[in-house]
Amino acid sequence: MRTLLIAGNWKLNPTTAEAAAALAEGVKNGLGSATDVHVALAPPFVFLGAVDRVLEGSPIGLAGQDLYWESNGAFTGEISGPMLVDVGCTHVILGHSERRHGMGETNAHVNSKLKAALAAKLIPIVCIGETKEERLSEKTEEVLLEQLTGSLAGLSNEEMAGVVLAYEPVWAIGTGLTASPEQAQAVHAYIRGWLTQVFGEATAARVVVQYGGSVKPDNAAELLSRPDIDGALVGGAALKAADFLAIIKAGR
Ligand code: PEP
Image (tube, rainbow, N blue to C red; front, top):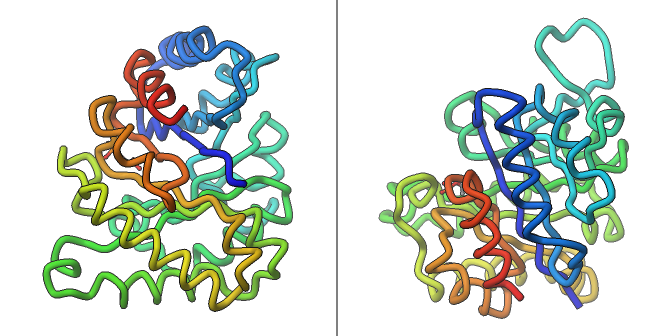
């Protein structure tokens, strides 16, 4: 009942609108009109307009990499949910580990952003995951519990069903290290169990839970074949259309 979502997080890449449009064009042409797997691209804010123009008429979603919880006002440097919608976004990534760990984003921040995303009718992709130290000291579930409870506080069942979660072990992001399919499935099953406890079985069964952390063409099929892994949030390998398309193909 869940459709896989493969999303490309381009982070602070590429460096020109022309290159961003070319990358989007490559993905669009390779994907065609296929909708058996959902696909979204998350370019830097300043290239959203250029990528949106390329994606016109394709089923590929457009994602912001973050948003601010206020709609407008004196918040220098920020971008709001309504602004993302205005430029063509359908999705928004929230609480990425690079924001949590590099920019001091807390679960309370993520929760405010999540509510703003839902109010703007964007599909939020909420990232959670443990650091290497936390995994080694067997605190993975404890950390995830804190992130899930704090980031998803106050949501109705219907709202929760429309949220995408991305389990991204911090030690696997951009490092070339990947959680084994067994390790990832075990955590995804834990997340699904938590969702069942808090939101009930019917809602838990609808929530798409992506895996992220060095997903590549050669490890995607194994990860995506696991019962609770419903797609991938892809960083490095999303910067080459051929690699990203191969990951999408692996999910089919
Ligand atoms: C990410 O940016 O969310 C990510 C998982 O990056 P990478 O695929 O490069 O590890």
